[in-house]
Image (cartoon, rainbow, N blue to C red; front, side):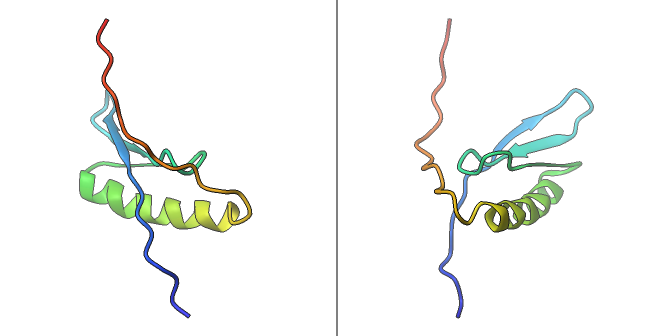
Length: 71
């Protein structure tokens, strides 16, 4: 049986060395990195699959959005 398609948002930052860092807010501790955006996204798919395997019993957080705060 094929599982239904799931969508996840990836927050992307770039570190001081130029490496891209990705995080999935819906999955606790789900991070990866890559030298390019394409590499990062491939790595994120693997990280998400691993996080889903280990968190099957825990409910996913629902991603609401990103807000910008200016001080």
